Image 1 (cartoon, one colour):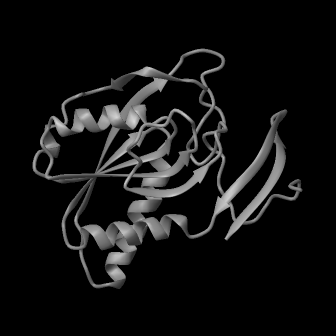
Image 2 (image 1 turned 30 degrees about the vertical axis):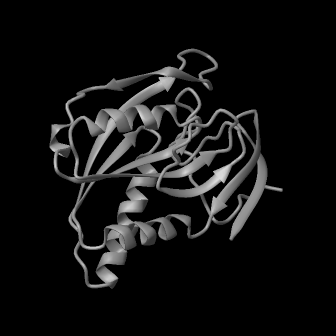
Image 3 (image 1 turned 120 degrees about the vertical axis):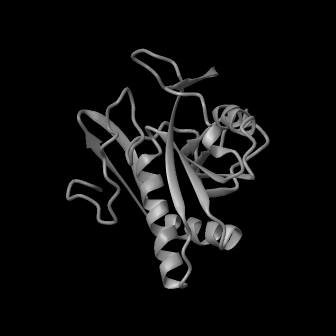
Length: 195
């Protein structure tokens, strides 16, 4: 079920708010079906992916508990930068920067699930995949909560997709605009000023 509404926020006109009900749980079920009893190394792409990652891992664990399965889940973090710096940092660049350690040797021989909040052109996730694969993991899967429908999208989509969105800039649920609006919570109940 979807709830869509518009509102004003700090003087900005927010075109709409999408609240996907049950999407993360559905993704967790698909991941559990594919991975079943294998241990998993979750690689969360910061900063935008942390809320999605947290909710996804909790759903995976809850599904495992209800099925009487224990799935060992270890979470690691990687921070990437692929957006222009400045006032209007809403354009992705060709260059991928890994902020912090680039040594991912702890992934060697592991089942890896890369958790990304949003994929637009796919260039960032493809560059990350190439980097991760140099450390010889046993398996690599990618999940994204959002995938933008853009004309210059690379061919490979994530293995697990929450939903597709139009080619619009989005904020909230840890996604930001120049570090603003990252803290907007997704709520199934619209605020009183929504229309």
